[in-house]
Image 1 (tube, rainbow, N blue to C red):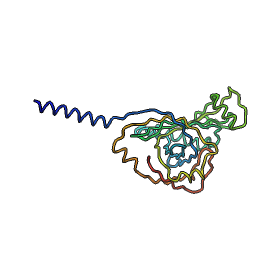
Image 2 (image 1 turned 135 degrees about the vertical axis):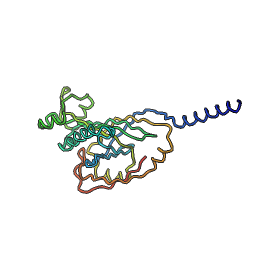
Image 3 (image 1 turned 90 degrees about the vertical axis):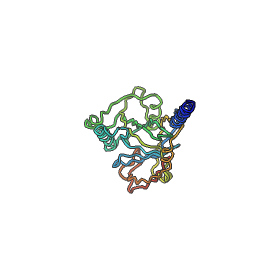
Image 4 (image 1 turned 30 degrees about the vertical axis):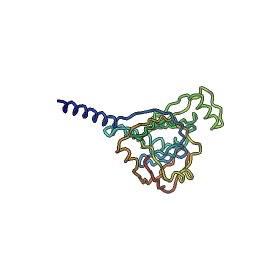
Length: 241
């Protein structure tokens, strides 16, 4: 009976220890991130970003589940039209809002918001296919737009707006300096980022972080947000953090 009692206690301690090791403690922190270079490969629905604190790989519409094939296809069709119509290059203001999940998950989910000139010439087909709408912006954004464009848009000015998003990973781009030298943004983009940190990590996530990936990004396809067209592919070495 005594042995059985001790066995139960020992088993309880063991289970508690195992559960404790698997417990994920989370903390939330708003970080001041800035994107200095941004290159897209629309053939593979991927965007590469060089940031102040980290680098990122973002798969367009990557937040849809495997069974949501049609929704993802519709999302990709919508996003590619933004690039097809060159709306990314005509943006007068760009915002990014991302949730960065570090630790055991090490993923990101993010959205890019483009503000377009109110007098931008758009066809009815473009307006309808992208469900474009005009709306006002807050005072801070308006001040930045007026400073960037040299214009004096009034407080109630309505602008065209469009957005797209994706999901991906926080990474190290080992040749990030080469990307910065050749493809830096004319105006860095401030990103509103919420970082979720996971305190305890599994053995498998620790192993995954040591993996090194080498990615060939055919960035000649599209170099977005006023970066200019690129003639040849650039080899991007990606090291998972």
